[in-house]
Length: 200
Image (cartoon, rainbow, N blue to C red; front, side):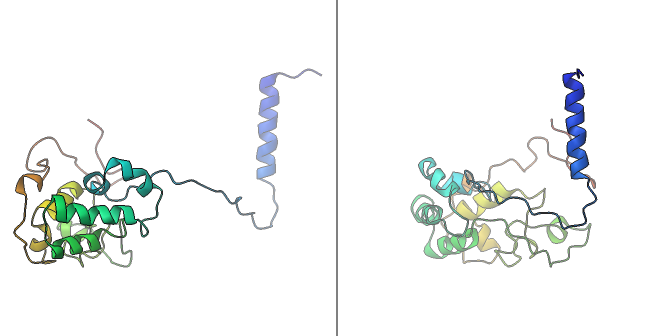
């Protein structure tokens, strides 16, 4: 009996479906253990890009967020050397940025609506004890994380939030990427997934 390739393929697929849909009441077997190789790690935008030389990115990419001496050393060296910040500001920012992960406290109840900074996720909220808006943390869609980061590195963001005294070593021309003061077109957000408007 001759059978077409298409029909043979369809029959094979039905056989697979039939096996997968058997009425076996035994618990499903867990998936096989897989081994993955980490090749990239990027949690907070502008952190590796500002502090670390590109030659060191691979070492950071392959490390874990709480065991990354390469990036931690780069932050300290950059803050005191390039940015010219004092020890208190350098130590505070290093403590905020490590481990390099975006934290969110799911036990914090954030009611919908109201002031964005008070009612939604707040970038670095946990790390700063709520100084950036609330202690939920995470990252709200409207959080200008690059501006926040540049303000902490080169501006007076940390002192304005009451984290450290002002060291008077701000570099104002570097403290803002100047994209949130009315220049350009910005996202509008809806109440259904994916929440953002169409690409433009």
